[in-house]
Image (tube, rainbow, N blue to C red):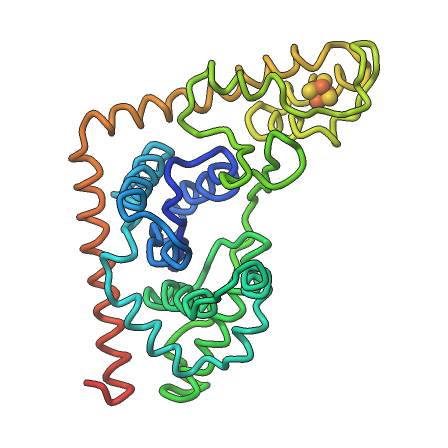
Length: 327
Ligand code: SF4
């Protein structure tokens, strides 16, 4: 079975943007591939943070992932910093990665522009990402559109290391490929930008229905629907997009028709969305509550995942060091 690797930052509880954009897809992938899923906490420390806060966010992320359907019996779920080979391989990859390639990364340029002092960690972030993937000899990585350039860098790193310590005919590291799977780019409730905690436009995956409604009710819709009798264009409305994610096709069709013909008002439309969201998110909320009542579930899931991840990581590092004259 081919391997797939994917990581998520320990940003606390998931919101529906990460759930629809990535984690729902992870749940599908774990049945089709040998999946390694990591909470990448080393990636989270390149900007200032509070240690206790990081600990809590990491725990909350694991609870969310398990509640959303990541199954420790079918996927290897672990926290990056508990497998030290990630940073060990990243150092080795630093020695074959061209500086120019890192400086050209769009995300680095964007973030560096906004910071007074730029850390080497920010520059080297994609090298650690290459190590995350290649440590597990992963052939596939599910990527969002903003990650394509980083994946290309992982391919460059694999190629350069292979050229120095393996051969073109018999490469050691595979050049990981993008797994183009149906993921959604979810806009925030402000309808202005991608859903993101830092923009405060999210709906938490584990939020109670009342709290979700308090956010949905005032959420931005098609500006053409000023009065109840004004027809709208569902395709320009973020609420319609969410209907497509949470409701079956027949409901989505009804929503589109009633929007175009002014057959209902936006509040009625949002109530139908809330029902669809509750049907999918209710069981996830219940699972999260059960996991929180029994913290041993998190402990056991991570212990199992870390053991499996370390087994593969140690094998790779042993072979890498042998080829490099380090063992
Ligand atoms: S009726 Fe629904 S889809 Fe149409 S603009 Fe209002 S909220 Fe959006």
